[in-house]
Amino acid sequence: MSTAVLDEAAPAPTPEVIESFTVTLIVRRYNPEVDEQPKWVDYDVEMFATDRILDALHKIKWEQDGSLTFRRSCAHGICGSDAMRINGRNRLACKTLIKDLDISKPIYVEAIKGLPLEKDLIVDMDPFFESFREVQPFLIPSSKPGAGKERIQSVADRARFDDTTKCILCAACTSSCPIFWTDGQYFGPAAIVNAHRFIFDSRDDAAKVRLDILNDKEGVWRCRTTFNCTDACPRGIQVTQAIAEVKQAIMRGKP
Image 1 (tube, rainbow, N blue to C red):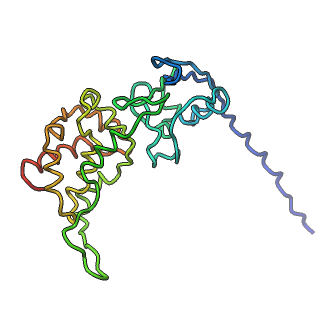
Image 2 (cartoon, rainbow, N blue to C red; image 1 turned 90 degrees about the vertical axis):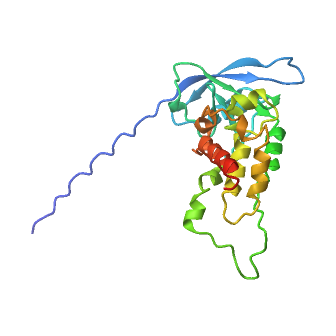
């Protein structure tokens, strides 16, 4: 009678050890109750390459300095609340990985520009949302579709404004615009993007109203096509192209 010989089980592979390292964050701090001017403060934090800037800020706040103040909510690039300047560029802290930055140098973190600074990394968003509301960013149909019916839209008509539906109102585009920094009346890229979303919607009947609003001296004609807004958008919206399309619609007198 033969006896089966069982192979010895192969040894389990040694798990790869992921090493942490020290990262220096230099954060621009400002407390209006005690500071006359903002100041830069250094923090050394132990991080992994796949951690995010938001994780580093959490470590600072939870383990080193509870007074550090910043906004964040979903932490997944959807709410747009943690937009800030990281190494001189507008980004979302929750989408910026440590490994994508040059960690041989300190990482500079500060509030976005062009909006009133309230505290640390928090700015007053009211002027931003005032411009947003002024372009009437909601559907304005001329009539109701009727009981039990809906407004039908073709795939081609939907595609015409698909890109600008992605805006999460983080203000990264608007606060990267040099015209917005120096002109407190300019609508800014985000407001124009959200106007675009409805101007080119075939179900909407108020395009002419929005085009008249954006034809103002502080509207689309203030744009200098620097592409800062497009580069800053965390959602990849072609902001400069959207602004150009609104300009063309104004000159045509219709979308």
